[in-house]
Image 1 (cartoon, rainbow over the protein chains, first blue to last red):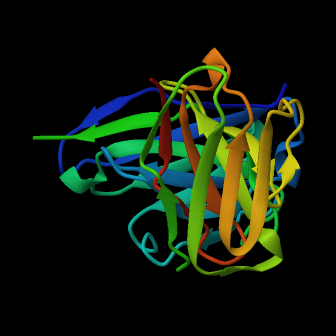
Image 2: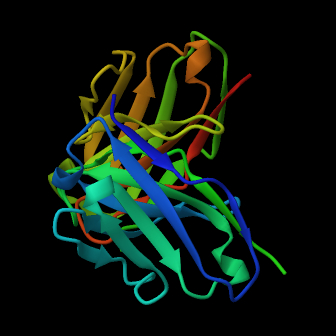
Amino acid sequence: EVQLVQSGAEVKKPGESLKISCKGSEYSFTTYWIGWVRQMPGKGLEWMGIIYPDDSDTRYSPSFQGQVTISADKSISTAYLQWSSLKASDTAIYYCARSRAGISGTPVDYWGQGTLVTVSS
Amino acid sequence: DIVLTQSPGTLSLSPGERATLSCRASQSVTSSYLAWYQQKPGQAPRLLIYGASSRASGIPDRFSGSGSGTDFTLTISRLEPEDFAVYFCHQYSSSPRTFGQGTKVEIK
């Protein structure tokens, strides 16, 4: 069965850096896009961006461009979401999600279990 | 961005009852590129419906989707105990992809 397994919960201080991961298994990792989705406390889901692991083609939602970096290492079937300087407002659950298409045209069909990131002084 | 507004926010029903959930888009969702997901606490969302009305693999036929343009509906014909969860819609017709805020289906 297709699985996206995310790294565990993180507690960080403002200004710290962070990289969370999403490992895909039981499918061809390089033939699907991996997207990242944010869910702030008590709020809805927000699309952050998406990457094609085969060539690292990355598309960011305008709201998140410059705020985070999405990357992937196809040799270990893992995608990443990273921050260089966290803010308290980055506190949220972050999900990775798989799609056949990057921008549009196919839905997300599998999701990771989510990674809770808490940023607090 | 296409804003998706779901209603109601919470639906209180009993097992065996019919659930009707709405997702309204701020502009037309082309090619009916709209999906529905179910999410239970602490679990990853599960794809139920894509293309507005196509059931994903393994999804029971009590789940059905309909609609086009700006108005979409998810119907659960007879609620089973395992169906009490949060449901959200997602448009993948234009960038950036967006999601509805969710409808919670709770036991009455």
